[in-house]
Each structure stands twice: as structure tokens, then as C-alpha cells.
Amino acid sequence: VAGADRDNTGNTNAIVHGGKLFALREDSWPTELDPDTLETRGKWNFGGKLESKAMTAHPKLDPVTGELWSCGFFVRGRYDRDDMALQVVDRSGRLIREEFFVAPYPGLTHDFAVTRDHVIFPVMPLTVDVERMKRGGPFYAYDPDLPSCFGIMRRDGSTRDIRWFKVRQCFNGHIMNAFSEGSKVHLDGTIAPGNAFGFFPTVTGERSDPSQGIPTITRVTFDLASDDDGAVLTPFSAAIGEMPRCDPRREMSRYRYGYFKTRTGIVKLDWDSGSKTVHEMADSSAQEPVFVPRSADGAEDDGFILCVVNRPLEHRADLVILDAQNMTGPALATVKLPFDQPMAFHGNWVPVTRC
Image (tube, rainbow, N blue to C red):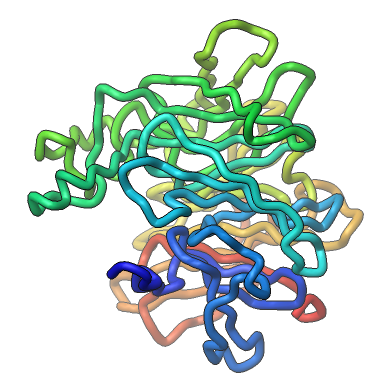
């Protein structure tokens, strides 16, 4: 498959930026779609300017500058070392920055984070080993002897200045938000003590302990003024779940409310009070909740939660719309879908004027 596009299915996330609709998969270039017909227009490499062979499926839109911040891993097409890249696209869709660096080991970077002052590159110990693959082994395998690594750099700095923090029992799947406070950088996301992607085996071919892969919404704090290369983990009490999101107007800055899915419904948590409310759903399974502000200048939780909800007893799914300020109340609207949407569906909401 040398020189191929790695079977780019573009099936992980969908975003709109610079007037274009993209389907994303983290080991490939974006795939442009027609925003009205959803017809595939083809691979997009920013007019030939993108040197990387991959962009993340979880880019971050800066609500202040309008820039789209992204990263890539194995961007040189080699798997014997983890060549990574930082990529920045301006509000018009023009690639304005691309810098390369090498991670501590060839591992997984599924999500990443940006604050007003810093960029955070998580590298998880789902390792890639070319020799293992030659022997018929899996592409990814979990190495419990390796720490999770978090590379942090200043936004106005260079990838040459990345400082790597090594944290054990801290497997990060997805990120709710991140923000900087002086010398401290806070990352809020789903953290498990072990292999959160348990469908991948360990490097010795065993199955990981499922209980070690259960994720909890956790604040991970790094102190750049300290010589310690670890972090402080502060789990949100009883906040077990995945697919975390927040108000997009508050991304990259300190915020109060977050949303995520749990086994029994959709959860809103309050970082200031430590409380949480749950929209319970019997015989159903929520996917990723997306917050849509009611207005541009409204309160942080004044808006709507959009969420695809599977109805397994009926073999189909719904799009459910909730009032974010009344999570325990009934749905404001339900759009019945005539199919059963597969799980782990990422998505975003954009006004039609942005396409």
C-alpha cells in the first residue's frame, strides 16, 4: 500500500471550515463533501500545501481567531517512529502553519487540545511495531509498561520547545476542553487507568482487563513551573462516560459546563459546583451530545443539546433535542431516523450560513 491513501474512509468526524464540509479520519487527508448533496468531492490537501499525510479527526476551532488547529501522527508515512505535526488553518481555510516533531514512541494520538496559550499533544501507549506487523500481529497493541505522554508547547512558540510529561494510569480517549491558568495547563477529558480501547490486545497478545478501561471525566493538571514531569489527576465524582463536549464559545478557555454520554443517558456537569444532572433514557443508548448556543451572546448553558440516540428495541435511532438548562425535562423535539446509526458517531452542528 506504499503511496496509497490508507483506504481513507473519512468516517470518524465531520466539520465545516472556510466554507467547506469535510469528513475526517485521523490517519488521512480530509475528504471534501458537497454541503448540500453530500456528494464526495475528493481529498483535500489545501491546494497542495499540506506536507503531512494525515490530519486529526478532532481539530479545534478557535472561537476568538476563527483558526482551525489540528495535528497529525505518522505524518511521514513511517511506522518505526512517530513523526507528528502541528497544523493551523486560518478562518478562510488557508493553511498558514505546519511544524513537525517526533513523539517519545510510536503511539496513538486520537484527540488533542488547544488553550489560549498552549497546545497539548497526548500520545497513548497503544503502540505500533513494524516487526510485530510483519509477524502477522495487530497494528496497535497496548503496552502497560509505557506511560502516557503529553507534549505541551506555547501557541506562540515552536514544536522544538515541546515539553513531554509522562503520566501513568492515565489513558486519554477524548477531550472535553482545556485551558491555561498562569503556569498551569488543565486538560479535561475521559481518563481510564488502563487500556480504554480494549478491542486492541496487549503487546503480549492478551486481552486487557475491561475494568481498567472504564473512563471517568477527569481534570489533568500540568505545572510548567515545576520540575516534575507528571500531572495531578482530579476525577469528577461519579462521572463515568464518554464523548465529552462543551459550549464551543468557551473552548480553549476556562468554562463551567460540560456534557457527555453515560450508559443511562446524557449528563450535564458543573465544574464550579461539582454537581451533575442526567437526562435518563430507558431502553436507549446515547451517542455524542453536541451543545448549540441559543444566541451568540447568551449564557454558557443557554442553548440546546443535540444527540443521536439509539433505540435498540426498535432497530433504529432518533435525533433528540434537549433544553440544556432543563436536562431532566422532556425532549423539546425528536427527529425519528429510519435507520440504526452505528455507535461512536462524532458530529458537529453548524448554521447553514457557514456552508
